[in-house]
Length: 440
Image 1 (cartoon, rainbow, N blue to C red):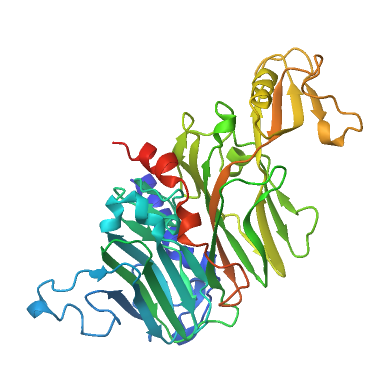
Image 2: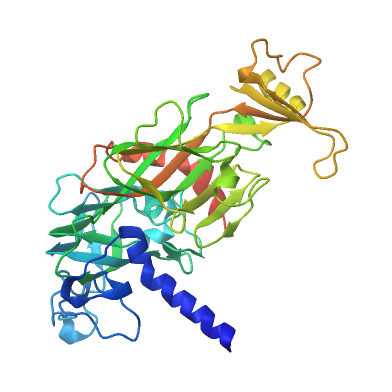
């Protein structure tokens, strides 16, 4: 019984402290003192703080007005959804004053049509800013790349049955907030949603604004890292990312994920302060990656036959702070043995061998492994040489990579590039992804 109580208390603490951990909200407004000095987030058994009010915005109460929910059809479910026409932009959240968004739930007819999910975009604006802080394809924003739906749950997102989107990232604002959904497909769609939030008196001056950045490179440059988050200036926190990879068919049968994640902070230029050891290592596993999900890290799609991968890492218990600027990249490096590399080169694949590691046995080697850092060598051997060692060989490669970066910033706007157009967001997805992963 004691174990069950401890687990329950641990779960409650996790829920109640998430907002403070992510946003740094520590307002003592209205006497909300002690360990719970943040707007409206208190122990379950405590009375509500003065001046903090719970509100839901939905099609049944667009502006979340007091006593105005479900007014149509004599109170009997009259406006449960919106119809969003092709090319139409729909404002689903529009509030003035200080607040804290605590949950977003959303679904619609697009969940049955994978080919249009990346044609729907979500944009969020804080405190009257002209440029959105959040701008992303709808499905990728909610924690799973490649425009896919799949049952999962982690600390920040969930798709309970693979039929809806949930986001629990705290999103504070000081004077105003607006969320827009834009249908950039040629189809009409039904849109169900609710945005749960707290109306609060104020936030501390050091409050940070929630941001995202989405990008895609259909064929990364050889030897150049993919930018998960281009350099963003200001003070803030890198919250994490979800990444989608569509493997280049030139490298079929090889492993894509030797690239290291690098985080450049506070003036870093040529070399980062924070660096990992490999792609699967960054998301907490090792020696390749299958499918799994955890609170802060996971691999939701891992299809080696078709080279399709979607995975995530969220820095909630291990914060990544920056005081001046931040940039996040991931190397484009794969792995294969020499015979496979020679075969790929013969077939015209673009690659560059960078490192080789030779060992007798992975678990019980009786001789010391040999490592050759080819890029550091003045006269490095060529992989086509007969005496080039046969071993675990890393090589630069070019794949289709997309990512959603999540971060907090001390400004409601950034100078990051705008969301790419629909043509780039959906390029080749029908054949490479949708028809493969949705065949059932």
